[in-house]
View 1 (cartoon, rainbow, N blue to C red):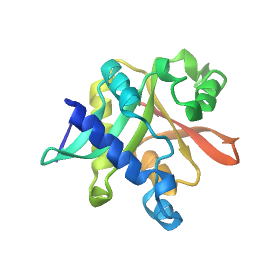
View 2 (view 1 turned 90 degrees about the horizontal axis):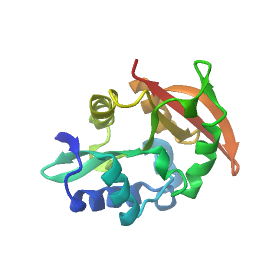
View 3 (view 1 turned 180 degrees about the vertical axis):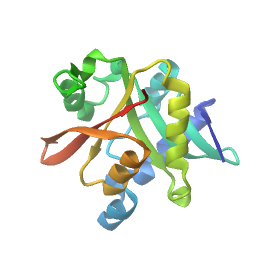
Length: 182
């Protein structure tokens, strides 16, 4: 297994396939509780634009994408309506006495591992690659995770994210998490 930057359109399309398979709308509730889920769907045009601004990170095995961790820069905040409430909150929520939007940060746009490869440490390796590639350029990595997504919450806390704010939107509870590399 290799953790690397995306190098082809084919890899971006494979990300979308894993995303589709793990989207909450395609999973029975029991799978969501045991394996986690993703809530946002990207399309080929958007993920290609995101990749052109900051290379996406993937895990591959035999040249097949088995996991991904998307970087979403602030300039994409209006491209996914479901994320606008989070971006709006980042203008008011503080971390170490400063509003988050005043930091040089990026959003962990989504992280997901193919079912066949869950539980093999890929989540941690994807984040280690994020730190290697992006920690010299950005102060923080910020993400939000649904309180219902217990596997994802546990995994994020285990790699070093801290919950700094919890809020409700559309009858769901969300946690804003920060990974401070300092």
